[in-house]
Length: 258
Ligand SMILES: Nc1ncnc2c1ncn2[C@@H]1O[C@H](COP(=O)(O)OP(=O)(O)OP(=O)(O)O)[C@@H](O)[C@H]1O
Ligand SMILES: [Mg+2]
Image (cartoon, rainbow, N blue to C red; front, side, top):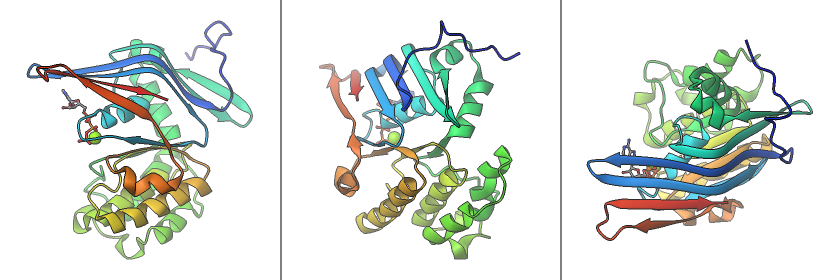
């Protein structure tokens, strides 16, 4: 049975805050080489456009996976996600959901509220382009509307709808991944280097369309990129971070705040 939210475990936050993280850490280790992402405080507000810029290996995907509830923090003091249904603010204590291993609840929140454009595209190979784009709406049982047609048109995918993803170019596949993430009109889009394998001109064009669609749909976006030059004119708030490396380079720590 679902537990009612009590006043005692409701944290007082401004209504328009989506993420509130304090003292969140993710540690990773492989073959004696350690990495730690440290987030002393991070707040993201509804409608913000956030850019996470940094070189390969600095922890961008690690942070995005935490924000999409895909990977569990190694330690967290506070990790709250807020969303609105009509005028009521609902608060999810992500920290507690992870500690209680409520994987179903976490994936339900992700499915309903987040669209994820993965670094590797992540399209399902056995579905056509159209089926890939439509999947999230179908899973959520959303009614048919103009969203998919508009996205297909805006992203120039008309001629590719019946094809399997493997017969598309990289750029086309990335545009399909963007359409798929936007199709169910989530409150949040998390995009991990969505145009990384495109040339600078194509990357700029796709990114312009992407950000315009996000603005028109009133979606909050968190986007990782290694190329600030490609996106610096799009009015994004850049999260600050810095990395510390131990002398033997066996441990790297990236600290993100914002
Ligand atoms: N499964 C894993 N096990 C151990 N270490 C990992 C694992 N995945 C990533 N790492 C390490 O964590 C660090 C951060 O990786 P992450 O993928 O977050 O970087 P990134 O900024 O997204 O890099 P890129 O720009 O190349 O995508 C790296 O040093 C990486 O080697
Ligand atoms: Mg990455």
